[in-house]
Image 1: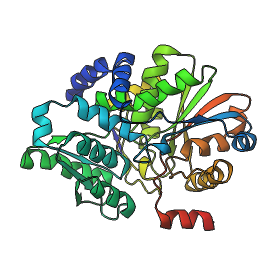
Image 2: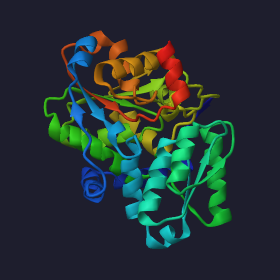
Image 3: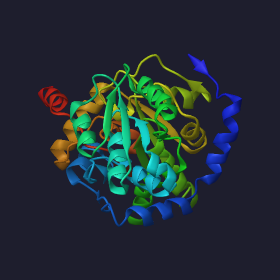
Length: 335
């Protein structure tokens, strides 16, 4: 089903776009660097040999919540007005964004309500509760949980934190791209998993300003390809389902701010299958001894699927998260 961006959203999108800058990413680094470690950027020889390119893995799985989203959550909460912190926040998630918000809320002493769909990853649910969030299960998927979270804003006088339509989230997650830029000046291509798209938007913000010749490629799951289809069509495409084990890619509706940035800033998008990501999880475990969730393995899945395209290039592949549950991992390894 095709839906163009509604005209009444254009002014909000233009305002938010005007707020995003490399200076905002640098300010975000000042906020999060006392709290979070700088994540490693590692060239694993066995992985490079298998992929046939000079690949460096950005290990966002080494962050305290196991995923890159924590960068955005901390920066957003630090920039939130005190009156809104006092009232509390609400968001929707499949896991990593929710852990980010819950971690940041605990750090800043903010009440936090998180909506997840029924059947959500139980280990991610447990982690969010452990950070002190009130967890509510609602709906069949992320997008139904998101609509319920937005409904609770008025009912409970909370501030809704969108998973990607927030400039300060993009500034926060953009800090990993700033680290790549500083540590790997010879990089030719950055390959970034795309769910809602905040990570790719951070890369566009950093490299678009500091090194625009770097190629930025987004990766989506074949079974959750709303952003890919929208990017190809140049207008919103909403899918009926997002049936992928890669929680971080399981969106069926694109969002206005990241779509506007991805539409103009991405050089290409690649689709990977469920088996491509499963094979990449196994490859990363075997060649780097790192655990990746489905979304976290998507960049390596794209590199493996298109070896000829990346041959001879210096590639930064973002391992966006490692929060895979035991049952899913057991199933992947048995395969």
